[in-house]
Image 1 (cartoon, rainbow, N blue to C red):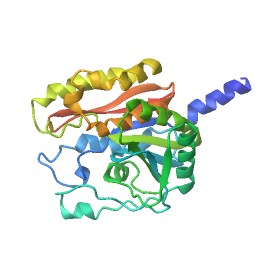
Image 2 (image 1 turned 90 degrees about the horizontal axis):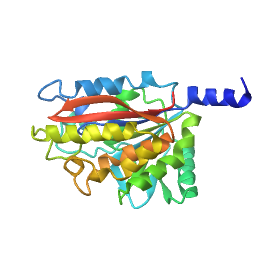
Image 3 (image 1 turned 30 degrees about the horizontal axis):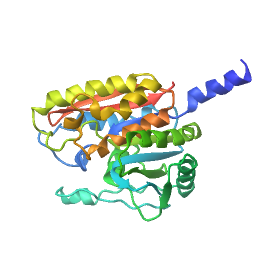
Length: 280
């Protein structure tokens, strides 16, 4: 085997995938629901993700639908605190802990990569990890022994800009960094629990699956124009698509890797999906 072939084979075997996962409703996996099994399948899915990775991540970058700013911002504290940015939940959910270290060096690298690609970015040493990060991380990596850095969305919610941000960070995957988009494939708050929104979520989900699984050029074209998809604005109302945008960043970081639909669940009358991008 030639040197070039050996290098390619090594990269295919070891580069991290990128993921888009549902992070649930508030601290939903750590409280009682009616019905009691409402979030069980999603919980099981998240708990088993680590076993699907090619190796243990060196660090994790999470983009959550709960942090937006005028420019891309990155947590740079070596010991980030937690932000309990939900309300009306049981008292014990405000005592949840996830003591993962941050990674100031990685945060600086992310900012440099984004700035080099004409995407203004800054470090934020004061920002903690919101529940779109620590809730799924408690299930995926419960030992909290892998450094976690959170990357914000941009206030303009421009899907193309977020795909470009992902593209700027793609090289981190070859260094053992796992990039995760944490959001929800359906996020119309009026729709949860309403049976009328079941067909709405199904229609948008079918479109989303086809878009993600298309080859890269077609995938990126479709995701850039997602708002014109069937039932798109009933699934993500105008100016409230922040829970879909983490998918754009995960797709951008995928490069030419293929997209896969890896999970689907019916929760609170609507369909939720998860995706992985990988060349394995």
